[in-house]
Length: 376
Image (cartoon, rainbow, N blue to C red; front, top):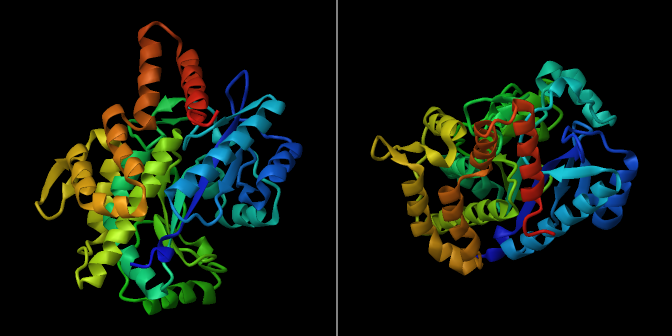
């Protein structure tokens, strides 16, 4: 198997919060300047001023990704402290309101706000995007079709958005509820070929609805800028080890599906409606819930499904050198994702008599600390 076709790239989006209040803050431009000195073009603005995004260079393996992500978090955090800010990794803020956020003053974001109006103004959300290199465009579409089945599994492991504007929303990933208000999102339908994909994109471009495929925000998509397949479904992982576990999982799944194709076998393509139901179950319950096993036609606990995935992916993890990171998915299941831990902090504070405001601030403090675990 050509391992060069399985290179990695990871994008992470963070929130910047005030050191004292824990509320989101709009950083001075000097902060971004300082970060760019160390990270160059790997760091960029996001739609809202209180957000910042980093992207790794091309990584040959998960170990490379670890090095770059660790360095990026350290740089962003150290520079934030100079301006009385802290770096926070989570897909939603526990209590701040989107209504008070200001968009970044750049031409791209100004046009997006004009085009999308209220749908994009609520985008006080952060995500993790993982790219795996697949050089053949046709193979990219083939693997995308099959990989859709596993997207809910990746989401469950990453969930980090149980709060919205100070309220527990009763789900582990409220981020997706916000993001689904945008057009061209969710689980894509299976496509027969790269030609079908290009014709579909061409129709949207020719009609003037979008400029190019970068305005298609599916949970998984062929990248426009790179020869990669980009998984976009994941919440922003608070703990860096959780991010790396998902990166390893995605790389191993890609290797497995390519290996199956070489043996003239493929994972069954299921309707987007069915995969979407598992997406909802992951969004609602995360690793504490169950997903539908379409072959059995019944719900199976996520813990069991994760063990099954480890079973058929372990040989691929060993070949790729990411066995440790893949096995960390067990840790996520046992101790809960970031969303589970945030809710536990909040409920514990309420149980000992803390006010709702103080309990939410404790969640922010927890997130700030966990963002830097293993980094500082």
